[in-house]
Length: 85
Image (cartoon, rainbow, N blue to C red):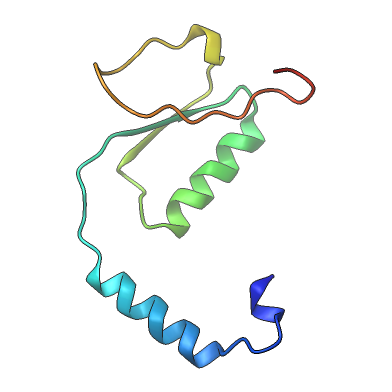
């Protein structure tokens, strides 16, 4: 990863990271994530924990084509199945 790049300054990285973490302002947003695969849901749960977003997200085991919109507006991010577009 980038931490192995020549010239990478680990102390500077942690300093900038910590400063940005303290300066961030929370936003109110609803997060819903779903997948058909239990392993993907487990991985998403771990990612949410790493980002300190546990409790702000709802996880479900659902097929994308069976989802119904939860709000009038929002952002949809998806990863189509491999080999299909």
